[in-house]
Image (cartoon, rainbow, N blue to C red; front, side, top):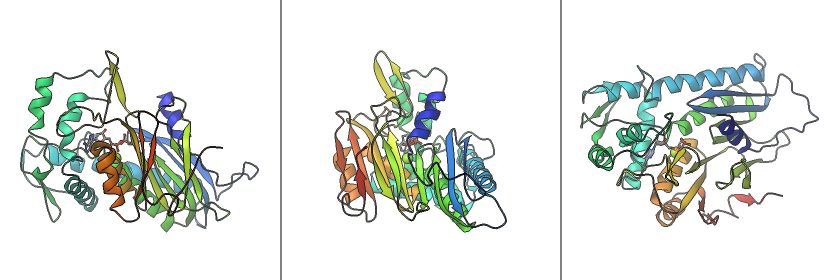
Length: 338
Ligand code: ADP
Ligand code: MG
């Protein structure tokens, strides 16, 4: 856990105020463990006359917890829990749940099912978050493949129905991005003009630095164990999200098994990529697309990114080669570490 803490905190390198400036009611920096990961919010400036920056951060973390209670697969009583335990009956859920599932369906359809929230039976079987995960028996993996099919999820108004009662959904590949957007909206509506929100590596740069220049957000080196970066992007009001094979994994018989699964095989994706970072206006898009592109691989993933306006990506492979989408150097500036 300590290592995870360090890596997640060091993957965001921002300089909003100089160290000479003292922290006051207008700025604050807090870290909490929410959404099964380390979350950090830094406010560099806010113009809210009623509340201090620390109070706003506490409220933002409360908001994250509320969304977790709605979108988590494991928290009893959440919308997702109800959908998964309804035995195929229709379940009425919140607007947020509908929004996230609709987005997920969109990423599934544009990727021909590379992104698939009905991956849940397989992620449960693999149990990457467990104490001692091991490779499940191949026949069990193959059996569960029948239940992985995003077209079994039907939305009608505010109800969700799983047409296959054995199907289960898991929003782990997209929910953090959605929650990062909602947190940014909340802070902005409450007078925050400069902040960074980091939900376990899902980063949103709200506004710009207090001197008006862009934030510099680091992209972690997937090969490093100490959280060092391959470079950084300079952005304002943008999200940077990375999906990587280094985030959650275990090693068995010298082989690495990570948590992004190929819905076609049931096994961790093996296509030579180690990380995909997405820069976008909305973090929900960055989160969905980083997972999608990781599964699609370099060629198809890059083709997809270059077909979407306002979204850029860096793909990194196991030979430490970096590949940049077409907007780099034009819309987005990448700088190597000094
Ligand atoms: P993280 O949430 O760790 O930053 P991702 O956004 O890439 O990383 O999401 C990985 C999570 O998404 C997994 O832990 C699992 O819950 C879920 N997942 C795994 N494979 C897929 C897939 N092919 N499509 C959709 N979700 C997936
Ligand atoms: Mg994702």
